[in-house]
Image (cartoon, rainbow, N blue to C red; front, side):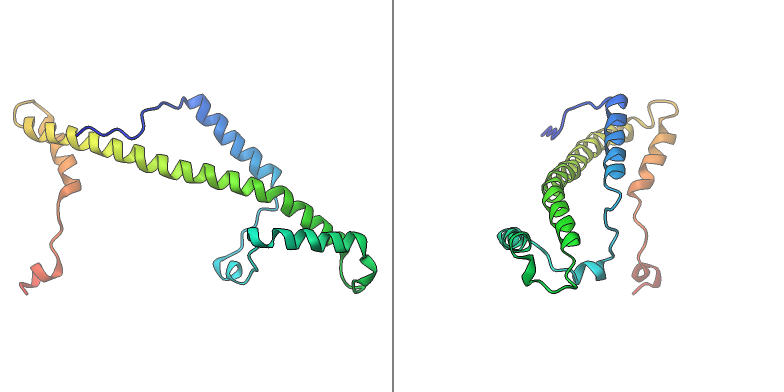
Length: 156
């Protein structure tokens, strides 16, 4: 069965435009975090359930700042809140693009390897009939050689 999951083209110019767009994103978001896994595990994750809580906290800071301790940094809270509200939707969009790219790479990789296996089969079938094809067959066959396990080498 000939299953082709993706049939598309991306010009070198368009690919370069996408690379430039990523570079622009990185330039516009120089504060992107590089936290390590251990650090990430210690951060309180704000999911959709806490969105209303953040908004209520912002309302309190704006309407009743007098109740907050003097050490509470209202300006930093405001900056963090605004940045969060701005980049959170961008994160969702980026995840969608990333997921689409990952799945597309997987699909087109699958399409390509399946076609390459057909090519290998044709090379294997004609290696002794077409001059020079046996060299290509040997190079391709190297990907399918099985290494002997230690069990086989010891005879156990």
